[in-house]
Image 1 (cartoon, rainbow, N blue to C red):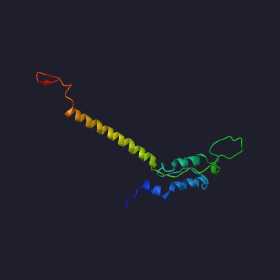
Image 2: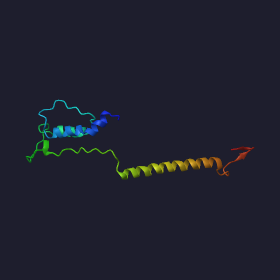
Image 3: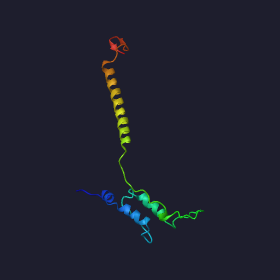
Image 4: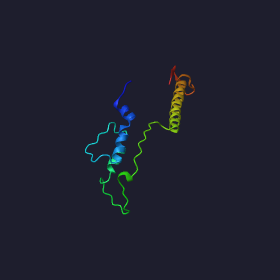
Length: 128
């Protein structure tokens, strides 16, 4: 069975677990944080680290904490499938495009080979 780093990373959900650990404050300090396949939950990790308490200066008049676990955990659900509606739309659009091009080509070849002869002018035996 062939394996690669990106597929293994997606199946193991290691980035998701690291985001949850950072969100729950399981690290005392973070100097360097490395993620494989940053496209998979990289934005969630950036959001959690950026919104950690003490990372930003926000003046709240309501005395409500707006950092750390007081904020919602980012959505980390990965779905690369298009909804059925968009699949149908793409099928219809590309089908219409193929049909239009086919019809235009068919008519062009038919006119070239069998087209009306009234518009042709014969002068001294040559078609002009």
